[in-house]
Structures are given as C-alpha cells and as structure tokens.
Image (cartoon, rainbow, N blue to C red):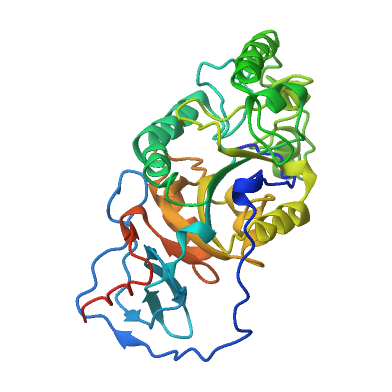
Length: 362
C-alpha cells in the first residue's frame, strides 16, 4: 500500500453542525472492577473472510466507560492489557449528536473513475489491481451498508484524502469552506473524469539487471529493488498530484464532508470540537498505515476524542497473502493495547436517550 502520510483538515460544515458541547464535569471516579466472562466467544467473528476472529482465553467485563446523559448510541468495545493478562470489554452509551463517523483514505482507484494503478509495475492503495478490487468488495459488502445505516443517526460522516482541496474536488465534495451545488458537483465529476483519464498510466518496468557488490549483495539487492517503490519510475511523474476521489463503491451523500490531509490535524481537531463532536467511530484503510498515522488516523484523534475503531470496517495491507484477514487481526490486536475496538454488530442505535446498555452475561 502506498499512501502519502500527509495530515489534514476535517469539516462537518455549516450551521447545522455548529452546536457546541455542553460543559461536562472535569473528572469522575471510575471503578475499574474486572469481572471474568465465562465461556467467551470469539470477537470480530461476523466477517471472518475479512478479519480473522480474535480469540483470547482471558476475558473480563468492566463497568460502563462512556455514559452520556441522553445517550442513544450503544457501542460495546474491548481492549487488551498485558498487565490484566487478557481482553477487557465494556459497554458505552454515546450521544449520537456528538458522534462522527470518519472514513480514512477511501481511495477511488481501479474503480472505473479513471485513477488506476500504473502499469506494468506501479503501486497504490493495496498495491496491486487484484488487491484493490478485493478492498472494493469489502466496501460494497461491509463499509457502505454501515454508512447508510448510521448516516442519518450520527452528526456527520467525513472522509479523509491526501493533498489539499483542489479545484476539481472543491466542486465534487462538501468541505469546511462550502457545500457545492448539484450543478457544481456535476461539473466537478465531468472534470474529474477528464483529468484522471488524460493521465498516462504507462510507466517504468522492473529492472532486468542489478549491479551488486560482492561484499554485501543482500544489502545492495534491496537498495536497488525494494519491496515497494511508488516513485516516478514505477508510477510516473504527476501520479500523486492527481485529485484522488472517494471510491465509487461508497454512496457519498451531498452532506458528507471531505477532509484534506495537508491542512493539518490541529484544524481538524478544532473544527470537530467547535461543532460538538466528542466521539469518533473510525473506519477506513489501511489499518496498519493510513488508518493509524495520517491526519485522521487514530494516533491523532485519540489524543482529543473518544475513539472507537470499527474493527470489521477496516482492512490492513496484506503483502505475501491473498487475504487481509490475518493482517487486519494483527493490526487491530496491537492497536487494542491503547485503543478501544468495536464492531458493527456491537453498535446499536436505541432511539431512546439515556437507556443504559445491558452488561454482558457472566
């Protein structure tokens, strides 16, 4: 996967999102009581073709962690603790009007919009056309239905993409600055198609000969022929300056908002806070890279917001394998040392503010 780690702005946009959060008490005492869960079932077991289920013998139930007054969104979550020697699960009750769904880097590549993997050896997104096609299937089956189910229940849905807001995407997507009209969006789509399809996607081939030193041929070999190179030779000059669209398999709503990485996390953070967002349901690609460390990645967001990684709405890069299941499991399991992980079936909109989620049966 080649994704430029450039950091970004976010925007829920407009007055509809402009209600600040009510002042909350500075602190409270959390009873960190861990109760063993008898006969625990595998976690992330709903879609094993995408994520290898998490199996750990020691599982504990903790008290409710986030318990918003007038909460109407139940989000059960788990984390792993070496010191507790097992997985800790806890219920959470969020206010949906203080929650945003963020989709990290849903790159529209090899999806018919025009931006495609350069041939014969270029790399982008999940790095090969076959792997990119597999990620599109995940979006169609898992992510897009999740967005459709919760778009009108949370405050806003946001996407992050590399770069700055260029002239074409300004017409295509809502941002912190403006919401394009239907006519502007149609014009933007036309310009996007022309721009992406006018690029020459034919670039350099693999080297057929390498000059190696006799003293350290392995060192020289990987310097001359690394496992991943997304530079101009293989991808062509200008490839990374093209306007990257949201993948076509996501049905983007006109009210959804685009984030542009280069505008910086601080702008994103301040905008979210100004608009009353406290909770993030984080989805997107790729679990081990962009989802983790770009502007809208959990390393940034978890400094300022209550972040829940939606474990079956993300995929990790999967070199040397034909399935992302094991790589995604590994990435989420490691993240769970310092992040909360949930899954789609653990997220429930009650429609009844303040209803406390039931604890798991022991």
